[in-house]
Length: 291
Image (tube, rainbow, N blue to C red; front, side, top):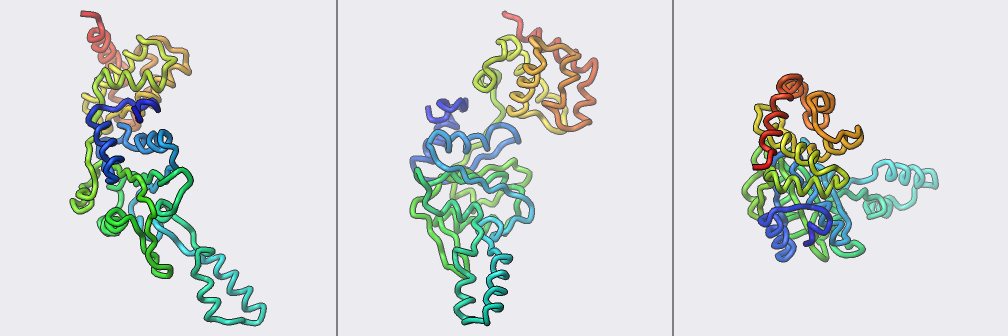
């Protein structure tokens, strides 16, 4: 009910693991192809619970300073110059003042450890597989004890643990030590019926026949030899593009004109141009005929 109340159509298994994550206070690790709704779960939870969403977008080379906090060196230099211009002052006292909260730039992990209005925030650690193993090792402290350490300030512990959602597109394997601290779920591409439910929830203005054709066509595309198969996000985007063009039914010409909404690589788009799109559409129409 928590997810469906916000228009997120989840399988029973996914809804169960989300419930257990909230009930037990355990981080939730979600793996799956890009565009299947992993990130959206964190957004939906934050909205449903009325909590702040704090997002740490992972990338290659991400380090602890970028994830936790950094010192505002520009402001520190201004303070030093101002003190020197005023006659120097007490250097030891100045040194102490420079490493206080006033000069700290808060990053997502530190923000997630702070008290928030409405309760503990939802911390989304997105695309963890883009980082490297040293950063994973650093995360162990944060996820084990819900605390981070800043050398100049000491250890900062969350008064109430954040709700943690980690996602991975599985471009590489995440270390077992990190996975063991989480509940795990593989978010797969949805079945036809579930994807149709999702599309009806996200694009309710689409006519029933068009929605069925769109979902069936995307489902068939995923079985083709493509460099990057379209996710549910692309299904929704494509339907909205078709609605913007006042399309009421798919045609080979419409498909060719709008392939950029569902396929993001030119090689994939070229495969589907012309007769190939027509062939797939004919197969979809046959499959959708009432028995």
